[in-house]
Amino acid sequence: MRFMPLTPLLHIAASKEALVQGAADFVAERLVACIGARGCCRLALAGGQTPRSLYQRLAAGTDLPAIDWSKVDFFFSDERCVPPDHADSNHRMARESLFERLPIAPGPVHRIVGEDDPRAAAARYQIELGETPLDLVLLGMGSDGHIASLFPRGRELNEWQARVVVTRNPLVAHRRVTLSLRALAEARAVCFVVTGVDKAALVSQVVAEFGSEQPTVPAAMVRPTSGEVNLFVDPLAAALLAQPLGATTRT
Ligand code: 6PG
Image (cartoon, rainbow, N blue to C red):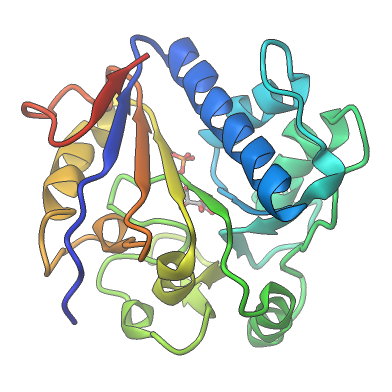
């Protein structure tokens, strides 16, 4: 499989707080523009813990463009195969840090039914996702280079028909339902948010691999046909970046 090289837009924040503010500004502006252009916005939320502060900041809304949350169709980049009240549930994290804090009722929330059989949940989610591209996909980055629930050397990295696949985290028991590389490639824009010194070596590798036709880590395989990949990083995660490639903004 050959990938189209791209140059990510690097947003290097001066602090973790500046990262949250910069990413929130970016997401809010993108949502407002998308709703203005198309009447709604299909947004896929990242899981894990990093986005928690970003979601809280977006829900608070202070000093951000006003978002009509009722026009946002919420999707998830991935979900763990657990019930929605489980501590590991990405839906629970989004519910607590975003949905329950919004000033108005959100638009449709397309939950991946983690408590169902994984294949049935994936099939159902793929129907809900449909064939319309996502307007913005938020992603974290695992320290092994995984994104959503696409793990290094996973056979699902070769899946280019399905938009939703079932995977297994090699480190822990429960299975996952995740967007595939095809769904990510069809997205109009992708936004990574990465913090922490433990991700520094990986961020440096991923930025370099975006220029390769044969990347080795899943994070560098995210290649929207629009070519738009935004990478928001805090100083610790940016620590090993050589002279940044391409467009770099410092916030
Ligand atoms: C998940 C996420 C996963 C996450 C990374 C980073 O369900 O776990 O989709 O891809 O974004 O593992 O997680 P942290 O933000 O907790 O470091």
